[in-house]
Image (tube, rainbow, N blue to C red; front, side, top):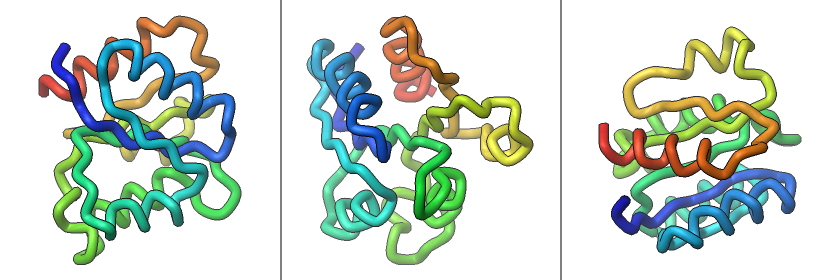
Length: 127
């Protein structure tokens, strides 16, 4: 697995910390933020990311709504093809299933096995 720069977006500190720790243990560079507003700011600042982990259910905006912005907002155009992993306890929700597709993977919570995180990263970066 090659080193990648990964943005982790989750409103729950413990979730983003766990994902971040797993990714860093394999040599990835991780930037953690607690909201889609913070993620948008990071992207607008021009930071380059190879992959984005995006929590589905957050207080101010669902991850799938932010994904649509990433894919369609002119200001975020440099990230339109960036692979995204939606992390959710609601993998069966129609909205989540509709979002899944090219460059979008779904990782189901609870995250019990760190290998699941590493496998989805490997798959997303090698598509």
